[in-house]
Amino acid sequence: MLGVGEKPKILVVDDEPQITRVLKTTLSSHGYAIRTASDGDDALQVMKSWTPDLVMTDLRMPNMNGIELCRYLRAKSGIPIIVLSVRNEERAKVEALDAGADDYVTKPFSVDELLARVRAALRRVSTSQQPESDVIEVGHFRIDTRAHRVEIKGREMRLTPKEFDILTYLARHPERVVTHRALLAAVWGDTRTEQPEYLRVFIGHLRKKLEPDDTSPSYITTEPWVGYRFNPEGE
Image (cartoon, rainbow, N blue to C red; front, side, top):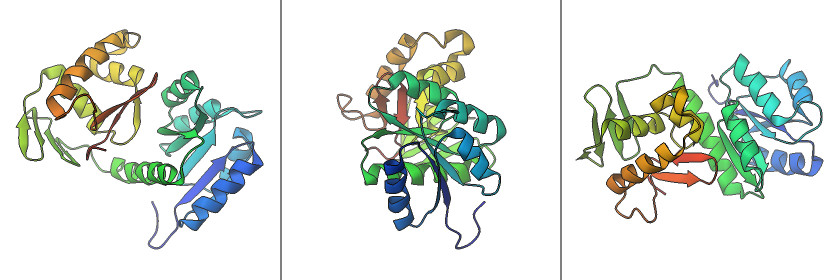
């Protein structure tokens, strides 16, 4: 938990010195305390004496890579993890998210996107420390899980039980990437994690009910080959 006036601490893990320099300069200028590491092993050494509020890690590094680091950190704590990836690493992104990463930013990235992902990740960790409630109020949505009622901007929306379960799970993880596997396991159980066609059908139905223009969805957006992202205030 951050103290009053304390800067959020971010550990940047990447084996490319140019990337770590740019990220350190950018994030420091926006009020974050930054330390860097060259790979997962180096990151764990840094964390022995310095506890970050967020870890930002590349995937492909020597020694302990980003996916291994995600697994190790998630086994120990709930610290938010943002993965840095290149565009052709869809399979690696999924593996990292399934290993416990919260989100990813694709290289090359814009500063605005990077900062938005950092803010969202830090906001989620503060929210997750609160007890889980029967009522979820986020953005334009109010979801009463006990009464199975959904309101968007005060307007009640009728959903099927599975549509309701999908939306509830997404609403409990706003602004982060939820993989197909994680969503399938949460709604249908572990036996359905390799059947994403279930999701395509139900997400399609859900979008038609939530979105005024389902040809350009804003509340539930697709992360190609990876999963979905819930944007509670639209895009």
